[in-house]
Image 1 (cartoon, rainbow, N blue to C red):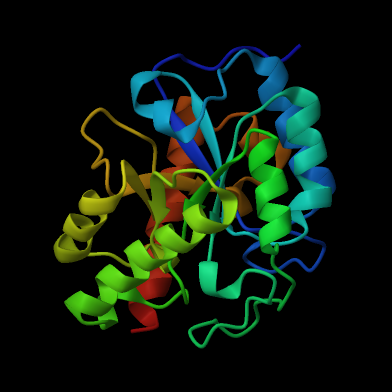
Image 2: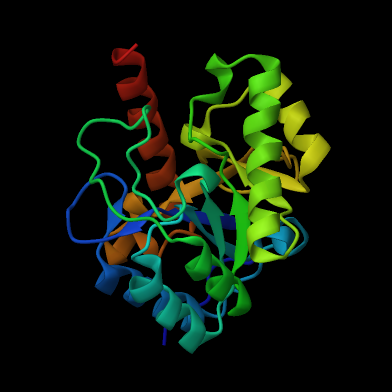
Length: 248
């Protein structure tokens, strides 16, 4: 039986696609299932995203983009283990593919859930959050365009699934003070992509997350909440920052 991690370290996991391509947004379904089995048995509470800041030592699970493979790769496991999760949907691409203009090279182009699938998922206790209408790099837009992408995606999802949409995720984690202020007008919280743990001081409208791509190895996933895991995440964060600086 896995030992329980230290109770003070909370984090939000980020997933995208559950597939075998090996891309930077992909996790094999079997790896995801093994990770969820570990979380279910380790004693660390897995909580809805909206509760994560009030539950020290807990984990929240999020999925960006709303890939159709969530239905077979994630939903049965989450349902079996009774684990909550949030799916951030790109409203203008529901039922299409992730071929938005800002898509990076090397990312697999795959089907996204349609509205019927999202409605069904929401009935199974999965929260549906907003991830804009067109998945743009938001800080490159005007103030009015930022607001339309955030609020327009929210409204369309609410209209289609018949439930309120209270959480938001910035595409590519791309945000600034102006955009975070817009998010505050429409949502209860918003997620970024800073590779870090949740702290009491974390901005509720730029919540850090741990990308599951860096935790594919069971050794590191099972130690994510430990001091050794924190050192590993810190090193990964530094390397990611260096790569981003070199690409500018």
